[in-house]
Image (cartoon, rainbow, N blue to C red):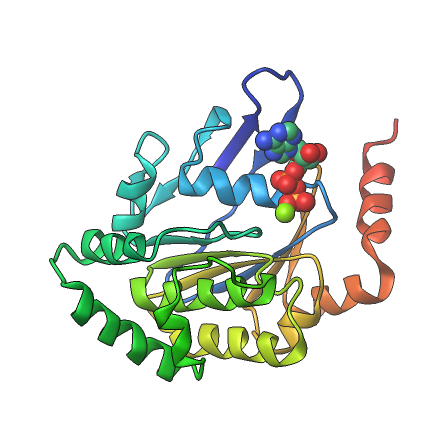
Length: 245
Ligand code: ADP
Ligand code: MG
């Protein structure tokens, strides 16, 4: 992501303000930041959400500029987004997504078997497979099911937007396990989180702090611990100091 500027179509103020980030194959990056810093907006823009206007910058994925591509084209290339607030989608939708991702045809009965295998691998309740995706799921169940979807679609880059929030400790372990199982030299992750807690289970290679639409600080896992200790006012304070006349 190079010098990305994003706003709402009818607004003048920018939400993403000159955002830069490079993620290489196999890397796990954590993106932290206070509420309203633009983390979810970034995730949505990466996936191709139509509600935002990109006025400047580039997003290169596997060497191609994806900003002009439709969301499903990006998904076919292996981009996956787990939403902060997962939506209810018809069960068949997941099968169609699978067919698109792997350029194949699969009957529902066969797809059901594949789904069961993934649930088993992730140590999740097989009864999940019999329920329409996310319909009537609790918040925590939806988050867990996002990980099933990720496992199923074998992304090249998975963006997880606060998949940890609202999870109890058991669910957090299941979600983290899923990510850790899927880590590979070919696959990358952008783990967006407000809290350090999930990073006790998913060890990131890099940690970035986003404030007011851009990364203000990057480091290793120790940065997350420092943030936990000192709070976001710590980086905000430094930012204010740096921009003061
Ligand atoms: P974060 O995920 O870091 O908490 P968001 O990306 O959700 O932050 O939001 C960043 C800012 O942009 C917030 O002030 C939010 O209210 C605003 N914003 C984002 N999307 C919309 C939208 N669709 N309509 C109105 N305001 C929005
Ligand atoms: Mg958010």
